[in-house]
Image 1 (cartoon, rainbow, N blue to C red):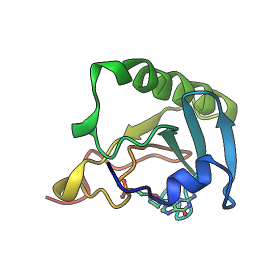
Image 2: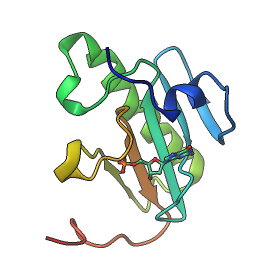
Image 3: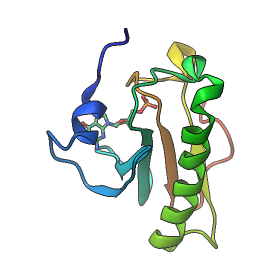
Image 4: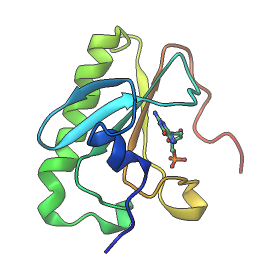
Length: 117
Ligand code: DGP
């Protein structure tokens, strides 16, 4: 059984967060340490630690993460200019919180691909 992270408490609204969207499968809230004018996290309500733990049964949830990302991008007014979706996995991927999450970055021209090698 995977250990809960702070994200489970945010999903259950036990601790404060700027929640923009929530439904039966996913929750989206503003990142506490934004790296771009728009920086939002889209997370499954169910604790899935990493991409390595995604199963075929999670496909509706993972699909919902994308449809919610595009809805939020429209709501934030960044859909037309464009944005970036990013999912870090594990140590080499730079994952800090072991509850699957998609970053949505936008609101400025982003650098190309990876910041460092
Ligand atoms: P990653 O490195 O991909 O695991 O990104 C984790 C992100 O989670 C990081 O950008 C900061 C954000 N974060 C960590 N703790 C909190 C929190 O308590 N509240 C919010 N809103 N964001 C958090």
